Image (cartoon, rainbow over all chains, first blue to last red; front, side, top):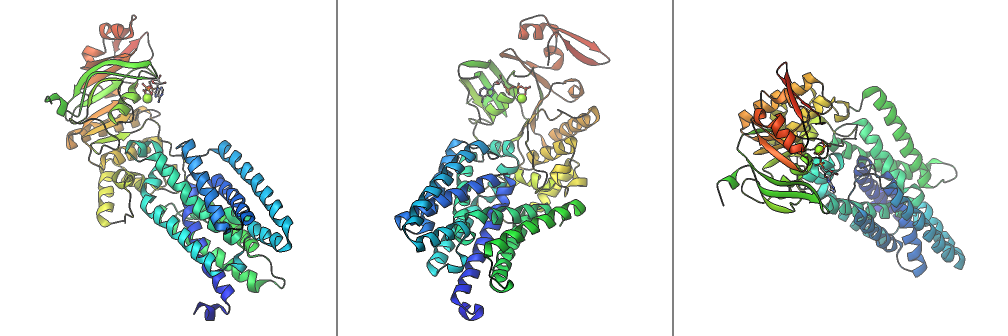
Length: 277
Length: 258
Ligand SMILES: Nc1ncnc2c1ncn2[C@@H]1O[C@H](COP(=O)(O)OP(=O)(O)OP(=O)(O)O)[C@@H](O)[C@H]1O
Ligand SMILES: [Mg+2]
């Protein structure tokens, strides 16, 4: 059915995968922005990069490698402390170490053959055009898990993110929550990397959410708006990549540009409307 | 269990400290239902730590602590607590009513859906503290006094029997401070809650409170203002001469910082 709608299996997969990732990135991104953890999201994409290249070197699925590395990092960051905001120094260390590892793995891997060099590029820029049904299945499982856990913890997470002292006194388990959230971020960045690559994942995670909170002050509306915009940006990016230019440009370029423009528009909106949608 | 142990707060021979450093010792007192207590003392005397003890966030090094006849435990629904420092450093994303809603179900796990009943509960308590005018405003735009009222609403919405307010008057001007104090004074009568309010200035509270709990120098004294805020009691607490003068119906403690 989808094949008929989109004309090709490849396109169907791209839209399906893209929609899925946009949805989850938009929702999880809201909490990232609220907790001022955009930098952590950036770090997780780099960790995912190391995981994916490591997995390629070992000959296993890149998603598996990304998940292994980023879940490990989530646990590590969680053990370091339950402070919700910031943690720039620790994250910066982990980030540069992960990038270094990724570069090493990528170097070793792409040197071995030309096809390998190509898959290396896919990891950097995403492989939405070559996504297959196994990837979709895996990505769906990751997204469902991330959203499922988020649905269970969203109220304490919101409380702990906005009013940590009040939340702690009400018995919200701050550290467990912090680890759970980082695990959700790990799952989300892993599927984002699959779609748009490490270089552009952060833009999909952060920009729609950051724009949404400029448009509205209501948490529920902001989450919905962020998800909506992230999906729209992804799909529009795909459409432009397929049909837009004479010479096909990568979807990631369009997605990043659309994301940045949305944020720019939201800034203007906030200046004049004060976030009241 | 004695009758006293059923009180909102009952402490016997309690010592609190960190890593061998004693903050307070020999704390023995009971607070009764509906009582309004002002907690005074210099910086670092252990006022915040005492509240955290009741919340189960700090353990006593010695002695017994009872809160409504039970051991302190985290997330005790019988206690409403407004922390000294609320870091609401998000200037976007939440409205005043969202902040109040946290007091109702912010700690609950599970999906949770908005309902009319939830909205009405929030509206009612916002009305009660007189914050209806800015219920929909983003928290980042509110003044210190307005935030304190919301803080109070967040605390009251869960119907606690004991309310702990840690320096709710800090950074407020006299008019705003009086408004908050009057509000707390009325609410503790209408809701019959016991209140412990930490402050550095006793004067605006004098017409409203039942007793003063004064912490200083590792020890404490509790009683009516006119028997605690005296030269004798405070000098023996601080272990050096302190004077209390009264002028224009106000008490001034000389010789120490409060
Ligand atoms: N978690 C902790 N670990 C070690 N020491 C602590 C801890 N919490 C508080 N203290 C110490 O206990 C003492 C009492 O602190 P507390 O915050 O209770 O003071 P306070 O009376 O509330 O002061 P203020 O008026 O400044 O708020 C201080 O010396 C503080 O440094
Ligand atoms: Mg204090």
